[in-house]
Image 1 (spheres, rainbow, N blue to C red):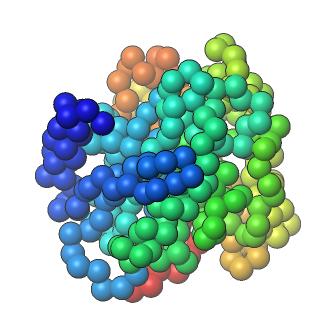
Image 2 (image 1 turned 120 degrees about the horizontal axis):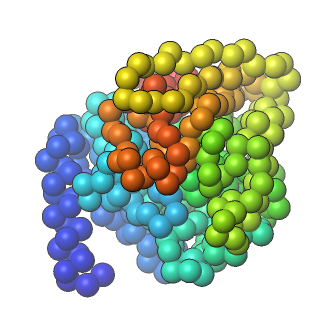
Length: 323
């Protein structure tokens, strides 16, 4: 990193830290098969009283960890993880993708037919981050979670399939499972939370070409088929019950959201799907609202719930928290 970029990153990290409920924010590095890679680490200000849960946060295509966590001043619903770090005594690791064939930051997820994905070992990178935080920050691998948006969400699916130590639960927004996959089958039960808009212009709710207008994005299966896959993996055989999420009037929000909750499976593993009717390729939030220029291009943003709050509630349900 050049001196100017390093200074800018330091200023951005310092600025966010001043508004993050005293959470400590640093950039850390790990050595992987692809060389040295970095990530943004957020940890509570209070001294640890024992092992802490660890949440891996993965940005979308063309993004980075600072933007996903709001470090650069961007409006990002995922930035709520910074507040949750101190409030809930969590470790948050904002992972960094690698440049793909088009030079844009992305992930080596499961889409075998995607043309622009990097050839990096991103599962190995995530493993190195987890091992470092176990050794140096007291991360608890029995409370290991991941959340990602868009291609970051698709990478959480690969982590759920292949990462060791195993994820306890994950939340995938704006993504689905690969139709033509390079990944292996899941190595055990993992609780899965899927969130996708029915009008997503980049990742079709009913499956198909990713970023079809641009081409080369590979294909995914319908998100409801992805939920079925995780039900089968988790030993869930009963149908879900549906629970509409109350709509908040105002802000011109045309979306309505419905939660599909499946009964617990093997070892208490859970599967939930939040279908965002008329929702676009945007992260739901009540307070962190995307500008019109973004929603005009990517579709409506739901303001009926906070995606991070939903994910954390789901993670807590998937794993009883040690106190």
